[in-house]
Image (cartoon, rainbow, N blue to C red; front, side, top):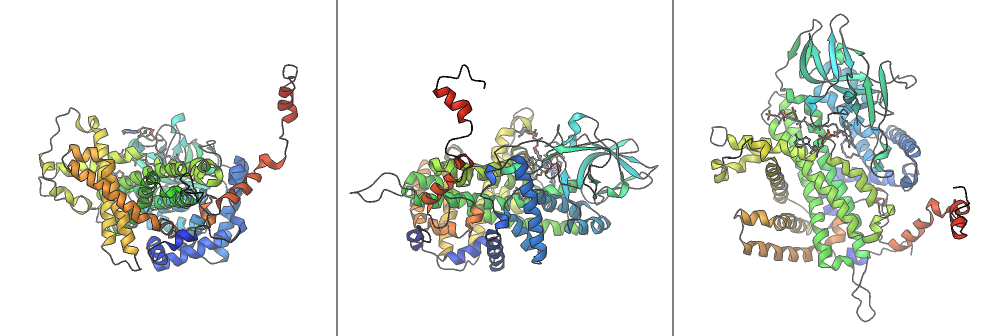
Length: 627
Ligand SMILES: CC/C=C\C/C=C\C/C=C\C/C=C\CC/C=C/C(=O)SCCNC(=O)CCNC(=O)[C@H](O)C(C)(C)COP(=O)(O)OP(=O)(O)OC[C@H]1O[C@@H](n2cnc3c(N)ncnc32)[C@H](O)[C@@H]1OP(=O)(O)O
Ligand SMILES: Cc1cc2nc3c(=O)[nH]c(=O)nc-3n(C[C@H](O)[C@H](O)[C@H](O)COP(=O)(O)OP(=O)(O)OC[C@H]3O[C@@H](n4cnc5c(N)ncnc54)[C@H](O)[C@@H]3O)c2cc1C
């Protein structure tokens, strides 16, 4: 039944102003208007179609991605879109591509680590896409251990150049997105050697390919690293391999904000801390946290709408069966994820603020908040991506069998999303960074250096002052426990930022009340899940644990009538969701049925291969047939 809203009865039940919630979700009325306009623009343009993605071969998929990226760029130019609108357009096009790394890493690395002069030279070219950049840090042998990178950049004072070289197989650059087939330039990270002395890892701008015919420049061996997890999905991205054979670049292509090499071959360090070499990672981790709420909310939107459409069991006197969303078990799996999507949205907003604040301070040579910013970006990146990847998979299961179909949108969403747990810092490795920061704070508790900001609470935890570790090799030996402490610290951050959000004025009928319910679900669900830890440390009593569980059930009942409206507030178009199960009108079954017939296997009634393989089998001719 075309045009009928099968979820209208659900939408009529809602107890709050959905339009006002859309603005809260978007961040501001302006952000909502931009997001709404651009998402509809992308959805209505056949040039951005994506429903056939899972049936394309790797080569077709990749070429189609190139076409879309070029078409997106043309749209941006033709419509004179602002930077903000252009970023939204790329977001709603929803295809992993070299452009993510060009805009998300190459440009930020030059901005953060380049001198004024370098920025003036390279940024205009990059902004106009006259050059396309990638971020070549990871190597075949080392990813997490950045100090272990083997690529060398040796200064040659005779020619005023660096010689970039890959001395071993394991020093081959391996993984950088966009490197394989597209990028013309890279920020390549290499061990700097000046006057025979090693000076640690630094970033260099290296041209990879000719701007005339795209052939690799002399001394470069470059290609794609091969198929990745999931058909379609992240295979639209050309993650690459690169070897340097004594490639020479001018001295002024070393990113020199943090440290410099003079033409005489002197190595000089500015007053800024060395850690700023890692600055691009700080930036991207912050954007990944914001992105987690998008990916999780998308999966939750699909699972919630479908749970309201799907009915199983419970028919009374021939009446309709029960909507699966009404089962308490379904609610106890789904609603904490709905609450998490909102929680991650708000902590992402806060992290964006924190990043802007630290950037401003760094510009004024105030480096005091850098360790905290590093711990927050690393920890929240780890926490939100792990929870989102797990959450997407849970949403697939919440959709039963149909969740496994590509047309549900969930398998591809999972395949595209799950590497976020690894890239930009493997999640456990990042939690160890948070643990290191926490232990450093604990060790300073008795001193005059008082913890502030996100660790201010530590002064209130009396017993931390008495913490002494009797275990040999302290940190390494206890690292599994310390990782758990780091997760708990990050969860505290998420909960406290949700509570802070609720302390702000939030307009719109019933909006604040809904958010309070979600915040309580988020916090109590954590308490319920980790009640063993809370009980064993005496933080709660068994009675508290039971009360929390009772309260959770009551909160789920309060969410139930508002569930569809709470996911409508994400304001996702059917194009962006890319899911038959999650379509706005809930008209799932006819769409699933129709889509099945479009599969290439159904192009002929009798399949290719019948005469060769099926018929001989049926006719018992298999032993004589040539297979
Ligand atoms: C489809 C895409 C969808 C969504 C994405 C949305 C937007 C994103 C846009 C684009 C991205 C798109 C695709 C992703 C592409 C992926 C790219 C990459 O993966 S790039 C490679 C990333 N690599 C890593 O993250 C490596 C991880 N390793 C490290 O960060 C470090 O090596 C590590 C910190 C683990 C260890 O460093 P090391 O110096 O060896 O050790 P140490 O622990 O001694 O640290 C020294 C000192 O420095 C402090 N510190 C470490 N890192 C930072 C930092 N980033 N900032 C500030 N400070 C830092 C550390 O705390 C320590 O300080 P103290 O001595 O304790 O004071
Ligand atoms: C899709 C994708 C895109 C990528 N894009 C880029 C890119 O554009 N540019 C780029 O430079 N890189 C890129 N990467 C590489 C990525 O950044 C690294 O893979 C990532 O940082 C993890 O490093 P690794 O592979 O060395 O993992 P490893 O460090 O080898 O991890 C293996 C295991 O060892 C554990 N481990 C490692 N160190 C420790 C430790 N100290 N203590 C305890 N456990 C430890 C980890 O927890 C993990 O379980 C990309 C990767 C992927 C998957």
